[in-house]
Image 1: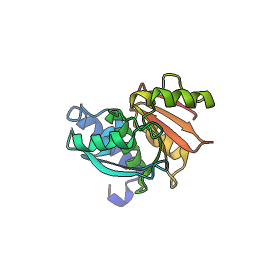
Image 2: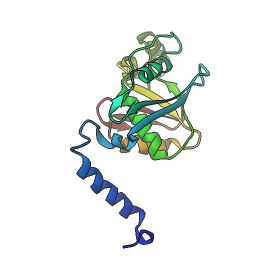
Image 3: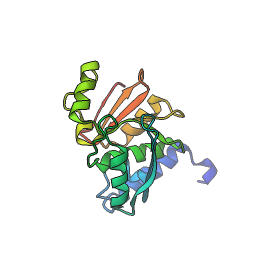
Image 4: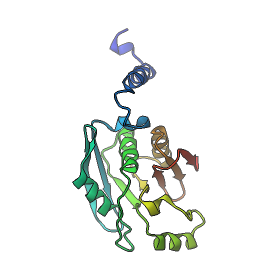
Length: 186
């Protein structure tokens, strides 16, 4: 079989076989998140604060503490200024999804950490806000891309099998979290 005759499905099959064979070596990576690469980078901006972040936060199996601290500050509750130790597994899901989407555009972060006060306020305005939201424990992010549809983002995040993925088409964003694997809004 020549390279020219190898179909996309064939390439994916080879990739899947390689992934299965390499699974014991990569046991500390979960699901498709090993697709985030040997170097994991996150690029986001906040329309609320005008801030942006572009950082490598993981290299060859190790998180970079200073980069995680920057992410914690960036992902803070912009209403109260409170920050929390954001769970890097959610960042892994976002980074792997971004890589699958093959775009250089940074995510627009709509919501990262939410203080209980902010969550209660948002809950009073919308039935779509969970009482015990994973945003309140630094495990969820609501993200948007101009260059990709909500459906494309949803499918990429769901393919990671790393946590919860919610599709909010009317509001034009995807919720990603590192909680139990579940999907909604499909």
